[in-house]
Image 1 (cartoon, rainbow, N blue to C red):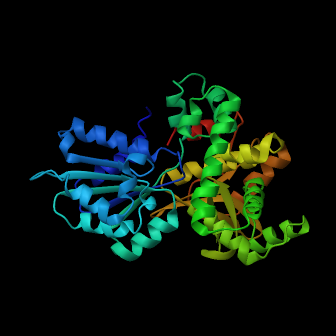
Image 2 (image 1 turned 180 degrees about the vertical axis):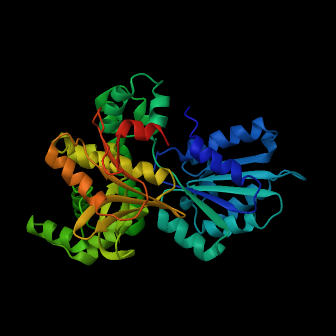
Image 3 (image 1 turned 30 degrees about the horizontal axis):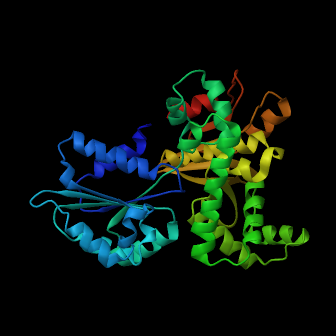
Length: 395
């Protein structure tokens, strides 16, 4: 079992603090496993079995607890007298008015509450309203490449990266050897997210249109798009729709953590731009099962992988605009800023110039990187060229 150290360290830092921990992310990215890992950590550090109450609401054994009153009674009956009790509620969005039970448990002394969910709006929206900022959200992604390599037992990092690039990073998918079985597993995740987390919750009637929007966005990762552009494109192919409908569907896909958005930032004007953005898939494996083998745009897939890695490392990521030039990513954390360009290769002189010139146009002194798959990187004008595999393994 991979340790997911990045997320574990966050939970350990927040242990025994008077705050609700909300772990969010796409289905099957490892949220339930993270709770089990943290429970094991607690036991190894002195907590007894009586101090841990753990419920997974996708388990039929707990169907009677899908009412918040029943859940509250069940948990309070199991609180350890005179000791701190750690309460884990997995996939909490399945519980009717779950906020009431969570809030009532939160106000009790000696109770630590940890919840997970697979829908951003349900958790963030309802919790933010009901709990008035008394929670911290930890957004979880599928495996980083470093975690993937560890799970696969090391070996040749370039060979492992090829597998990571092709198959994505859902933890269970990573240990499935058979290509067909793996694809069926990932497709099952996609269908569950679409039908259970989006169609059912959002009461979407036109499932085929939702799938068309999803395919369009997966096909255009790394491209600047707008709701109008998507609507116009789908309409031209016979799927008549409006930009408002598309915008609602895109929001639903983001709420289910299928997609992540990178807005645009004007580097010279130092302001965020309100229109046009890029979208990235939560997992490249999802994109592959939806689009099939026909679309393997290497540069854009690499860009997606780098984007997710920057998010994992805690950066806020924007698409940069410098005059009429585009910078793939402007990554910020506090007062730190780093610029990134991503390309499969810059060995061709024209490609080299295209990737380096936007970074040269930026006149500040923040670090600037060009990430490629080239084995013989060459920097220029203070811009460092780094191999993507090395970048992913060196945080």
